Amino acid sequence: MSTSRRKFLEYSLAGASLLALERGALAAPGGPATSKGVKKRILILGGTGFLGPAVVEAARARGHSLTLFNRGRTRPDLFPGVEKLRGDRDPNKGEGLKALEGRTWDAVVDTSGYYPRIVRASATLLAPSVKQYLFISSVSAYASDKTPHEDERGPTAVLADPTVEEMGKDYAFYGGLKRACEEAAEAAMPGRVANIRPGYIVGPEDRSDRFTYWPVRFDKGGEMLAPGTPKDPLQIIDVRDLAEWLVLLIERNTRGIFNAVGPGQAWTMGAMLDTCRKVTGKDTKVTWVPAEFLATQGEVGDVRLPIYMPPTGDTAGTHLRSNAKAVKAGLRFRPVDATVRDTLAWFKGLPQERRDKMRAGLPPAREAELLAAWAKASAAAAGKGG
Image 1 (cartoon, rainbow, N blue to C red):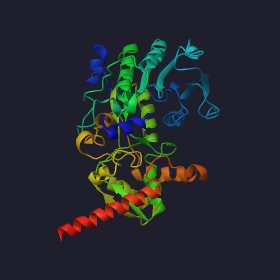
Image 2: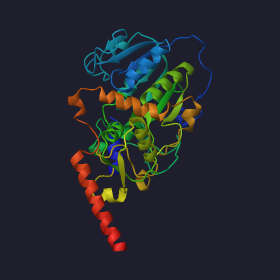
Image 3: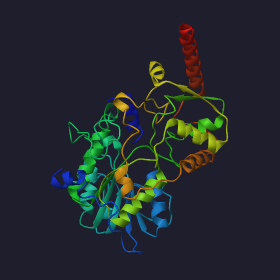
Image 4: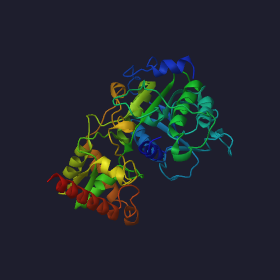
């Protein structure tokens, strides 16, 4: 596994019916929506992390009723007006899934499934009483990132040991585990599953700081290091757009496998930083440093250059996944300006202690060191050329 793919995985912590699903035969993009005014009962497995709360907000805005099932460890006081059931995804721990027994919902959104045994347990229990299962997977479920514009029919990762319940060294098993979770859900509820494969989910409340680093760094001004070239592709999806689309899939009872990536139009690293300039109003100097040079410094694919992946070799298709199927199924995107602006505003509203501990991106000293090294290398190359 390449270092860049490993870093992507690190931060994203079957039968005939499945074959038909993967080929799109069971998908119903843009299919019949529920009758106007019909409200859904939605169960969220998780619901208090990053995507979960966005789904809650989107569903409540549409008048649906929510139930959250989790251990109550992450922000337990969130959403005081929403029903909360306590338990454990692992049926072998404590009360397990007991709180879900005897209950019925129209749909379940699984935002916290990482191991097939765990997903199989919840999907099997809920199969008699739930019409639709939305599993939040990942584009890491694909076998590789080498092919630009690959759609949902691309080869997927396979686990050598399907019983493994650890991520493995360098998160080597993450993609295979996500794919196995998809299969477990479909096996328990054939023809009733929507497997959603997001790429980088970004926006307000994203505590990984992967995307947040870029507008925050631009807002600081001065000379800023940017990796690669302005034309290198970039794909993200605003957590709010993803959440609103998940609710739409529930309302339309849509099934299938979908790449949940955006934005709506082709985007690049250069366009992203131009958006940062527009939003912040800062005249930050952007110095583009080739990926090949950064690789010699041990930086490409590292957490200190978050999200960026060179559009060559093993990562040629990382930011070029096809989202045509998801768009046809109703996925829509807000302007990228809004994502950048709202993300920056959210970060600025955090306590100073938290803002001082950016969890991704180049520390100032390291950025200055790399810029100096690149300036020296450029001058040396220019001298030889002269």
